Length: 205
Image (cartoon, rainbow, N blue to C red):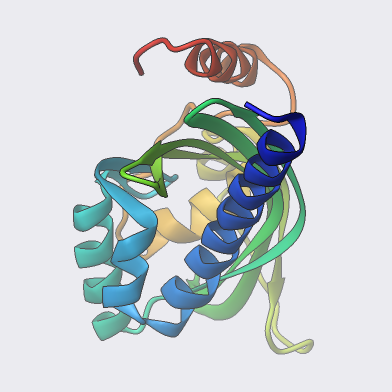
């Protein structure tokens, strides 16, 4: 293949992946569920603190959450993309913002991290095969500056530092939170990086 043609294809692949990652956030947070379904491959999976399952199941539980007034929003920053043939790994800086009731006080939690995505090009279309967030740090704040918030220290300490306030809120509103998600450092994130490298080499997930 001519080098210029190959370079153009690589640029096109990277742009398609970037568009997909940005559409994920806009369509999910807007509740545009049918277009949101397009970013996943049929076997695509979502891993989150409060949910682990298929893309279709994630859409269903997100719709149910919307109906109950669950408020979870996302914002993206820089994107790093590694492409190897028909496979790719991307890392996208992001924040997760959730509003909810904590100990009788309306609060906002902001969690900073990265979306770590396993992607594949099938039938000339890129899609997500696995989305695994990395949770780096978070905080919780009452919406009203006059409100006084007192947390259960024992419950807070059950969760990793990178998402303990997010997990606290999600637990209080009824979700079962996964306690071993990858953070900025540690065994979980190192294993994730290893899986990403293997994926680019052609390994199965």
